[in-house]
Image 1 (cartoon, rainbow, N blue to C red):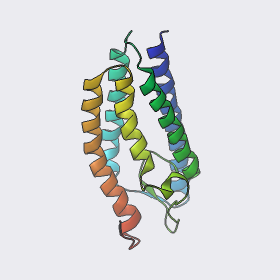
Image 2: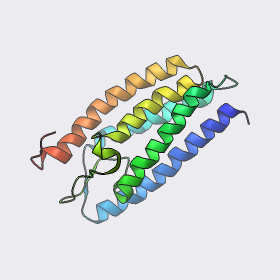
Image 3: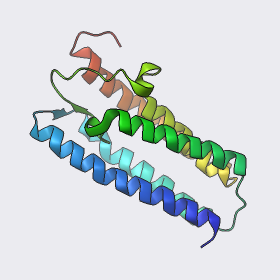
Image 4: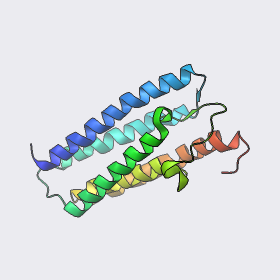
Length: 167
């Protein structure tokens, strides 16, 4: 297996394992009385991320790897783990709201409201650029921005609007 495919295997296994964690956390939260908000955009988000991975799998081939960008991607993975660890059992890929649960304000949330979305946005651009795939980075960055416009608006409304807290 060449290095590009090894990187893709790592990213794919990471995302699949995160889906397992997210499903487990979602089920636990829902059983405890949480509710899902704006579920209608979720299949679009999953399709977009799946397409991003598929396009990368089909295009990386024997392309050279730009090591400085691979290093940036590695740092993004550490940031991803930081976000997931900070949210712990509250982390999920869906918008799940738990009544009376305080907003998380530690870890990366001390610095920015949606650190996971910042990490994912950077990953969607950086990983393809690591292989010199500028068109993949541009296409999926635009698609992700459109999707995040809907998602962040829904999440902010759910987290801040109903609590009377200004977004």
